[in-house]
Image (spheres, rainbow, N blue to C red):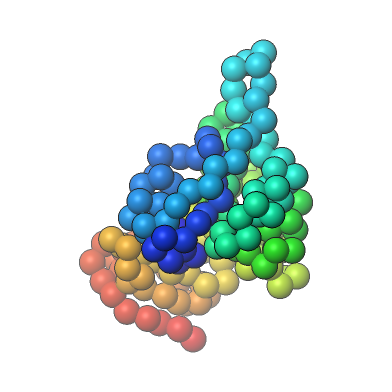
Amino acid sequence: IMTVCKAGGKLIVGRDCHRSVIGGLMLAGARPVYIKPEFNSDFGISTVILPSEIEKALKMNPDAEGVLITRPSYYGVCSDIRRIAEVVHSYGKVLIVDEPTSGIDVGAKLEIHKLLRQLAKSGVAVILISSDLPEILAIADRILVMRKGDIVYETVAVNATQEKVIEKGLMGSGREIG
């Protein structure tokens, strides 16, 4: 969030986002623009965020710096990330997808990896937030490790190891591009 938003900037987020997103907005001094996910009244849960709702929010907030979605949701529901990415990037904004593969089966995870790679190859900027370090090492082109709001390590993924990323996240600093 602090990478995308300046203090006072706006970030479009799902109303059902994780509390860490709210904390990140507060730390960044950014203002949330909430979009309401669809709701399944039979089960009493939020479901998908529609691309049309994101587009409406972008039209109403052209000064928003980006969009952050937490998908799949905590109920395992995934929105159409490809279509959402197309909408967000058609407005020249950044899409942040928070933990897109948490809690899903291996087959679905591989499909999301494939989608993220296709988006990146087509020139779309993809910011992946994940606590799954092997996943990050497997699909990222570049890795930035942040601690206490500062970038403490930056490298191309082919140079990264789990040990180095953990070490830098816990106590180190430095850039290792190349």
